[in-house]
Length: 358
Image (cartoon, rainbow, N blue to C red; front, side):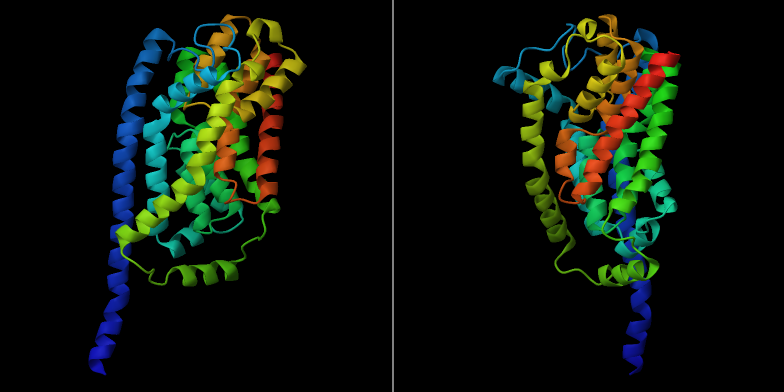
């Protein structure tokens, strides 16, 4: 009896040590991966942007005023350019999204991000800042959060905050465009990340009351079956199987028709209709991290007005058709429809504000 009690007494301490070790492993992998893929490259890119006032050519049209005509060649060329830019971050996103499911304690994550209140949304939005990932590369992490039963608002805030509040992109934007565009992007990015994400909780299936949070935490704190490696491989494979195919197909499709989405800048004008059109196109289209900056810089050099440019600076990075498809099985459809419509409307508002003030 005494031996049983002794083993029982030591079990909680052993579990705490194991969980602390898992969290430390996750943080170490995240820091190492982000340092290699994001932080160091962006540091050097910021120095170049400060001197050259550019971060490269537009991925849509290069140095030309309009993209190539729709074709399979156009689709393939865009896909090659896009994946050459994002593949490291995409792999890191899948690795971290799958590791999150097997290393991060469910009970702790639920208590921090499981409630449908503004605190959970705010914490997740702030946690997104070091990631600096594009909307597609951040999608696996959003999927991982939802599989841990974190709230819709918190998961969305983390997903939307990565591209729209990206500190590196804001620095690049200041050097390449102007501080006025940066301020406009920051204001509307904050509204999108924290306001829209929190409001999206109303479209979720459950409000996640405290008793439900406690129940889920107790259920998920039970010892999972299989070794850590087996569970991680299973999680990663499941994520790849359900995310990658839609991602690849959608990127090819959008690359093929990008000339239809983005007409010649000089012909599009700078009024309200142009703002609406580019807000919709920017919401659908997919780009690498900070790709909106050379796109806007190129289009403005060919006559695009401040209004459509402002709309694109918000909508291009925020969401895309591929990223919405990637997370479609983890969020209610009405939530994703709401987010997509909100991005378009905020893009129009951002464009109108830019047209009037810039």
